[in-house]
Amino acid sequence: MKAFVVTKYGKDGLRAADMPRPAVGPRDVLVDVRAASINPLDKMVRDGEFKQLIKYKRPFILGHDVSGVVVEVGSKVRGFSIGDEVFGRPRDLRIGTFAEFIAIDFDDVALKPRSLSFAEAAAVPLVALAAWQSLIDLAHVKPGQKALVHAGAGGLGSTVIQFAKHLGAHVATTAHTKDFDKVRALGADEVVDYTKQDFAEVLAGYDVVLDSLGPASLEKSLTVLKPGGLAISVVGPPDPAFADQLGQPFLAPVMALLSRKVRKRAKKLGVRYSFFFMCADGAELKLLADLYESGTLRPVLDKTFPFDETIEAMAYVEQGKANGKIVVTR
Image (cartoon, rainbow, N blue to C red):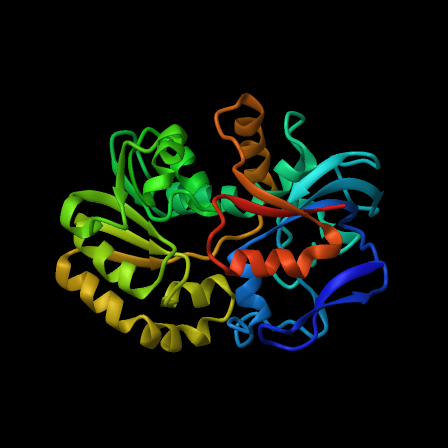
């Protein structure tokens, strides 16, 4: 089958290749891939940013989001049949959605919302699970609390805004002037134009901040939190809790060192810091599917590419100009 594989770590490390069709284990569903979306995580994995933590054996197929049709089921699979339309985010070490087929543990997939196309469904799993797990599992957001979501017009931000509003939060976001109407339509109550304003000078008293921009934004985000508030970063630095999540607690001292500066700053301000790395979860995805089916949430796509142009689609994402998710389709 045709696939896009990481042969070496680095910007030019992704190449098209012929790969064997995946073997189907007893807990696996084999999915005929109809669409896959591209995430910043794909770039990070391709570039080797997690190679000491998540040890892929090269060459490996890249891709973390998928929608498609089940064409084979393992002997222990329950709840899925051949012909089912599904979507999912395969667990780490079993990624590989930039391919014609992928075998996925059935615990990592859910039935695709009928109201969504394959392209729309492929745009959902990683960002929707990230929204659920960061706001519910980590931050425990409650109605009336205040949440700041950076980069609200992007693939992650546009989903988190919607989910935070669904939870009853007051939502602020940062965005370019041209995207004001878009993020307000998604549910943002306050919008800070990052081309004209410093969000740290106009926002205060927030319960939670979700940062996807990096160290400078994260450090300023700590200052807009109320006492006891939580700053969550999806780009690092990793904290000791991430070592436990990886099942490698011996790495906790390393993670503590990497995040020492930001944790120290947070403590001085009387707030908290947490690194966030989402987990595959088909049960949560099933609940999210209901929210998409009902129209409570909606996918936000920027552009689609044909499967053969996956490398070009990756390059488009890396330009940092996408307003929504980038999807490749077959």
